[in-house]
Length: 220
Image (cartoon, rainbow, N blue to C red; front, side):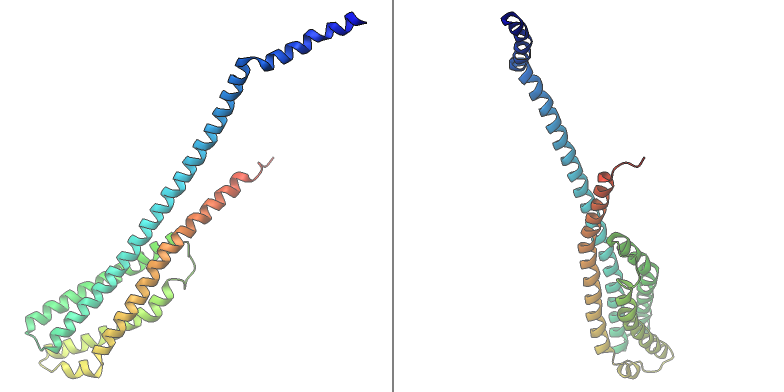
């Protein structure tokens, strides 16, 4: 009976010896280090990818907002310069040149307005109508339309040899230009803040969507 009991001891001693062997701890440590290193590297790469995406969205969003502000303030500035020339009763050549500059700004506005709004809408993830177009079409466009109508009437009268100042005064152009400047600031500031704020939110939404997809069990 004693001999049978002793016969089982060498096997137990073998397992214990293997676990206690120095190479075992080295191998286990190497495996754990590899797994942890892979996990940290994967986490860092994913974090860097999201940072790059967020940075790109921020830069593209602010660029689109700046382009929009450029065409808004260019049109306002050209309108102010034409108004000044008409109010001073400047020489016809100067008035014609300023009218041409104003028409160029008007064309730039018409050609780039909607495309810039589409870019901002895409970057912010606000695809529904109203979030961006409403303040532009309901406040900014009517303000510029009123100024354009008055300036055109005054310019045409001046070319016919008639005084332009009475038309400008009847339109109350000085106050109208101030109101349009304030509206331009409010709208462009709102769009810039939307591009900055919501581009980051869109990145976060995309990240959450990707994480949900990765966590979903595979379908069979």
